[in-house]
Length: 361
Image: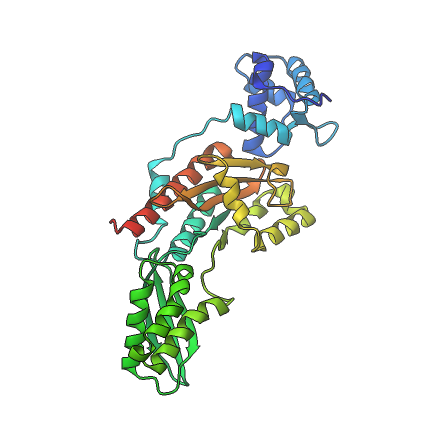
């Protein structure tokens, strides 16, 4: 085998034609492709023997391999990379597909996590693969905070962020707390928090509490302290930075080769369950513009070499990458169809994020 893989320019027209047809057939069927099948599909009507000779050359280049001695050939990861980079023809979306994606987003009034979860479910269904969505990685500015008295000496803190995320936390209510004290505490916090992230607000709010403790009153001041401190102490918050949504794991079972390899399936599901290192998904997408395709071992986040990741970043109104969306599936996925689906979904998410943050309709 030649250790150096050729570029498309180094392959003659006949080799490129055979290689393209073989890869497209493999991606459509998932089965190794024989010389007789290729001979029938090629427009220049080459004999099976001629096709077989070219396939042997491509195998020596490391672009094809044979799972069994008597079987046809299939593209290697290097072959798929060469095809994706130089031969992949990306189709357009039909009106029905666009409408399906748009309808899957819900409404602008929905919480961001619900919108992203719905988008992931729609993407999974259209791509027939598992979808991955990373929620915005940055802490959005606070829009409003409120306190709601509950029984048994507890109060509910309701935090609404500019990106639509709503978080609720239970806190111990100070003894003697009255509705007017809760209003005073909420008014104070809203004046300090509005337009700031929680991290920014914490740097100044402690000083403000001390300066205005007499005005607020001791009980209301303690409520303010408890409400802000609680956001640092709740590890089970409903929304955390870089939250990963995974939908459509069952689609992975549609790949016969993967479904029958119990160990590979177990490893992939374990990877999908991991919550650490999620920023790598965004980093992978942010290294280049638009949709990126990672084939097999190129995908450093998932340990299963037989999978491919198609991923795109989505951006806020300032064109900053804040999250990512994509699909993971077998290396033989239909890249030409999935790329535009991922791209359109990412663009819609970015547009929706921009509209929410700017108040657009």
